[in-house]
Image (cartoon, rainbow, N blue to C red; front, side, top):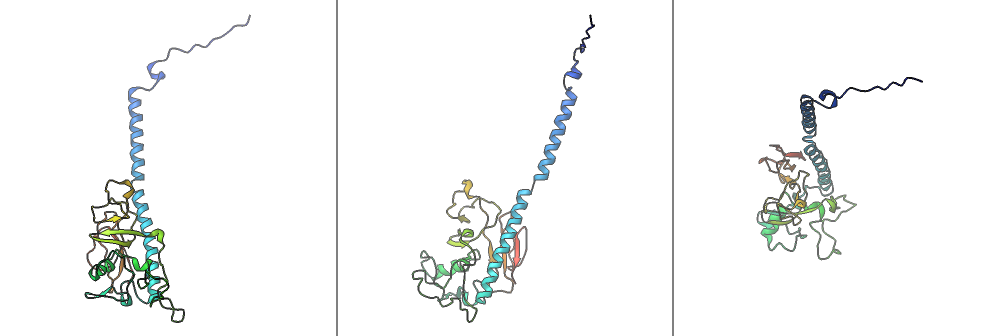
Length: 242
């Protein structure tokens, strides 16, 4: 009769049956170190993405502004498109919101650096009668005139800033909640509304000077530069047009 052999393992000791306390602590330490390293690697990726997208969008807006300049001969708010001469409003600018009660309100609305209305709407187009040809209509003969819109409606937002309402603005991609009534986008007045996490408005600063710049308030949402339109300060992002 053949001999049968049965291998019987010895009883498992605490060492072989599982990890010792020291080994478990080492594993926990290594996992913790890996988690910290991973989080450190990911830290700032969202901010960097917002920075890159904002820079790309600013390039598009600058392209639109420069096209406006090529078509009309002026930057928005300059020359023929100047909002006012002192307290007297430019009588050729007529495409204002009906909510503006007087010339003072119209000038403040028109001159605000966050208002990009001239890139969306012909400021000399009669809003109540589109059949009337505006005096600045594009002329193929002179290759001059307004032939926008220079920005699409998809990029448009209406912003209220410090009592100046319904401005046609654009915002950067750094998310911020509304600051009271300082910045209100499209009715996002509730600072606890997660849907209102939107960027700060771009500013077109230095109109009428030798230093015009498109400015994003950056990640901190504060305008750090106080000088010319091309000045860079703090974390502001600036593209100088001239």
